[in-house]
Length: 128
Image 1 (cartoon, helix red, strand yellow):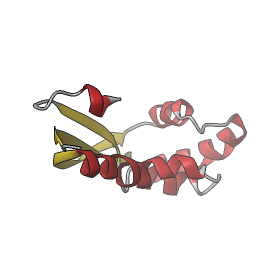
Image 2: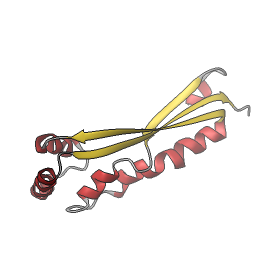
Image 3: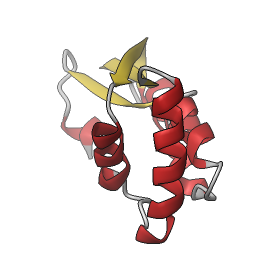
């Protein structure tokens, strides 16, 4: 629908998680749970398998910009809030999470996450 509605001089921008997003977090969680494959696939595959092929097929100009936002969570309470806010949070893992998180925070001053994203800007519709 978007490619039909966009004007010739228009642009479409899509930004989503990208390769390596949350690697530190997933590594931590794997100590006590299995991460749903679909969760990791969003970061690892969506932009390369869905967005970029669409962009290259339909637009004459495609710009790619990678971003990394480093986040340092500095307390157990904030780390727990982050855990509970995730779509894959399950109460059955709370006890294990707490044990690993408290140990990590006792040994480190913070928990560092690298939130990686890719911005794709599409412009100039290809003529059909």
